Image (cartoon, rainbow, N blue to C red):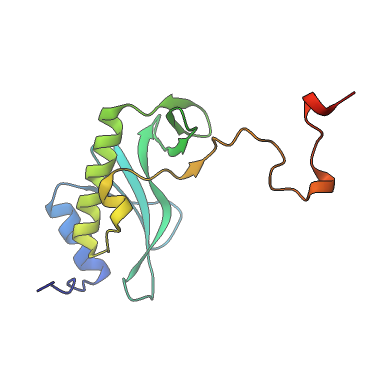
Amino acid sequence: MLKKPQRRTWDDILTELRRRQFDVQAVSGVANQQRIAKYDSAIVLEKADNEAGLRMVVRPGTVICGEIAQLVDHGFQKFFWTSKTEAPATADRLKALHQFVEELKEVTGSVTFYNEALGTVSDAYLYDRVKGRDLPENERPTPAWDRQ
């Protein structure tokens, strides 16, 4: 029989994260926000008045140059993007990020969806090379092969 996830308070979650060797630091200048890090990956969580007791402020990502990078899928390859740089998403970085997210969900009691259990999920998908595809037909640019 499936076990019901154990409900924990904000303080219980932070204590358990520290016990499991996560680096838990308060975000400077912001009340009730914590930056959680491990395996060169990080997330920013905030205390909330919802069922889970917390809210994700910054999605989990690999830490590059001190910044939490977003995972972007270009179809042919995945990249980690920050405001300053872009780095290829190597197998080692993706594996570390996936392990970080799985351990974090175990501590917080969050649900893991099927697609997330299979591997790391990207923050953005930018592989559609057909520009203007989502525009109404009369606003779409004329393809080069139709121009005369």
